[in-house]
Length: 327
Image 1 (cartoon, one colour):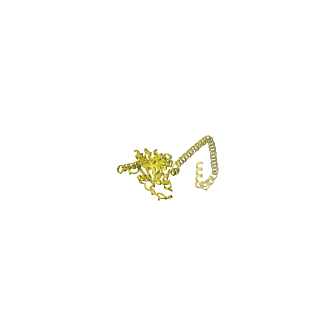
Image 2 (cartoon, rainbow, N blue to C red; image 1 turned 90 degrees about the vertical axis):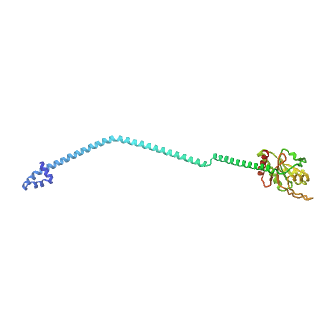
Image 3 (cartoon, one colour; image 1 turned 30 degrees about the horizontal axis):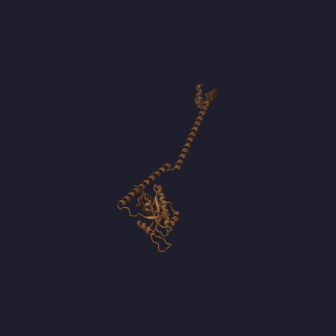
């Protein structure tokens, strides 16, 4: 039977196997006997298929059960993993927020620093103060050297050539009619100006310059210089006229006049030029030299200042001459 079944399977059926193995009559007999065998074989094959199918179903059910048990075991693990992932995500978000906050703080610090730099700039108050101090020191040193050079030059000039022979003794009267001489101002520095009270513009301008320069010298050096106004128009500049005229100018100016002879004598001593008025003339102008003469405490000529100098320049030169004389 086993061989028959194998033969049947190999040849694809009972009839074909019988045709190969037997003769015609025998094939019929075998066919009749083999048919139930084939039926049995088919049944066995079907039963095997059924057994196999049931086994497969049993295996599938077991797999399902195993899968269910494995899924039941894996669910807490997945939950733990999800919770861990959530925790990690939360930690990452916190770290990102912290990083963002740090970046914002750094940006704010940079902005504040940049604003501070813009406000302050490259020049600070300290550097500006240092620059001013250094510049002031340089200017002071330059002026000091310049003054010393000037004083040295003046000393050499005085030693080599001597002082000009200007000035000398004189006797005049002041605006109150009192007699005044060079001895009246002994021990004082004196600044002399020659002019006349009817002068329209030059004399008033020079007298105002004299007053401002004297105040500057007194303020800067502490030395008080006595200013004198000596008239070159004695016919009209009487003491009463001088007293009225003096109200418009510096209060320390002493107003002096005299006779024609006294004025000619002092003008000659100081090398001052002035024009004599015509005889019998009433309304006239007097041309005269325009200088300030600085005299020492011993009534010696020290320095002169021309009309071209300003009050500041007169004060500076006067201060330098006073310092030279005091040394």
